Length: 356
Image (tube, rainbow, N blue to C red):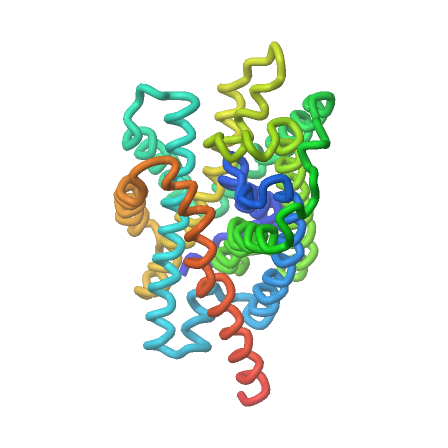
């Protein structure tokens, strides 16, 4: 059942970095903490390591099993099936949210005269083709392109340094800890807690012994890029301007004088989001294949793509509603999938180990 696919630790690292960056490269989760958003990021980063520990322990107990298979083993046939259906829905839902993020971004920034549905249909076609080609193709493509996003982000950060106004980061904790804690939970669930989905591809790693080092390295590098991004946006734009802007990172980069790279920005941002969409899309099709005892995920690519396109068109009425969902609703919606069920599985696995 799709066990022939294998990826290297380098490819896993690249996929993880692309996944964590995802749509956080175009929007700013945690911006409701205003000038303290960077503190919220740091707190969420630490919390993300705790969630990673839970996911990693689950993986170590079942290194050859996907999340769908782990649920079946630990929860039994019926309850495991129900939980797996919920997770498959979660993967499709997450893919649709990221797809809508980038559809709105493309519509707003690059192709304002193009119908939104057509933009997203093109994205579904491209990512669907990648998913149908398999995990190895997706990983090799990301391996070629994602490093350039890292270079681009660091380069933009350095170019904008002369335009930084550090006073935009002050006063620190002016509204107390509560807004920071709420914002940090938002960042924890988007994007760090979403790495639960990586349990669907970890079994295809060629050498399972390198997972811990690979995950920690990728987590640190992706987190560093995100932290650089929020400090850059706050220092250049300020918290008030970020709150008024749909896509602050793009607007920040536009502040560089005599530099018109809108097309290049769009390409790099789409590649990052495309990697995340592909992983979610692939996880959903693999999950359905395993749930139905099919030996091939490819027959499910088109049906899932149709659902994905319909969902991302229907789910929001506007871009502001999309951002409000990501900041206010998504953190609560994600709690069962990212925290409750994984912790429950980990506890059950310990009892199963002691009482085989």
